[in-house]
Image (cartoon, rainbow, N blue to C red):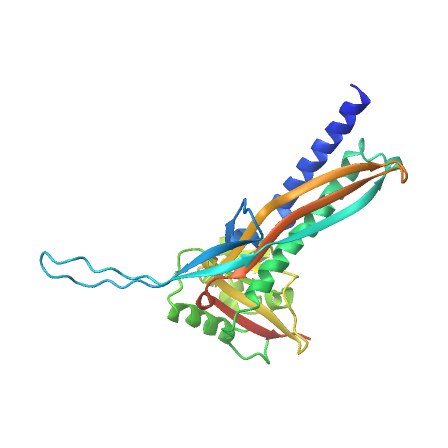
Length: 274
């Protein structure tokens, strides 16, 4: 195999590993929202569709229209980069374990940025529920549950709740959340703390939620259709050799954005956190 072929193989494998790492573990929230890919341009539009109303008609009369309210919501995309130098003497091209580490680091950095964009969109919600001087207790959970129900947010298996790790600990003290007598042994949170289904919702602990200056962690319960994520370019990797540094520069990049589409589909639970 020629030296040039080794170089090309290294680059192709590295790019594939970054992409797979991003898809596997880079973002926890992208799959929980409406997502549009292959966007051309700096912005895209999500359609917010209002409620329809059924009515009667006279014999041989015209079928009445629902006159749905279509409200476009603009989502702006931004470019993000995560690069680093890899010295030639690190033998990165032949050390698979080290290559995986560097590839994963870039993918995770971009994955955290994806989640940061989605969290920032959720933070624009004005539907605050519960006593913000308390943690995430049963009363606050039920208040948010009622808020989504009163807004006719669909209970169709596409509701998500993203909370901080302190709030996840708070939930573990609620019998209805943690006790097999209530949720069944297959839904116990002890089997893994990545996610748990409860009250028709997938609950996800997350370390990147906003904590205000007043010490309030903003947790969100929302329907998938209420939040939009747009991608002009998924994660790509560019690797260039710099002879003056005797190193490769590995640049991971993407173009993405997020927006809140329907404020009624989000219940934000501010939780006191020391």
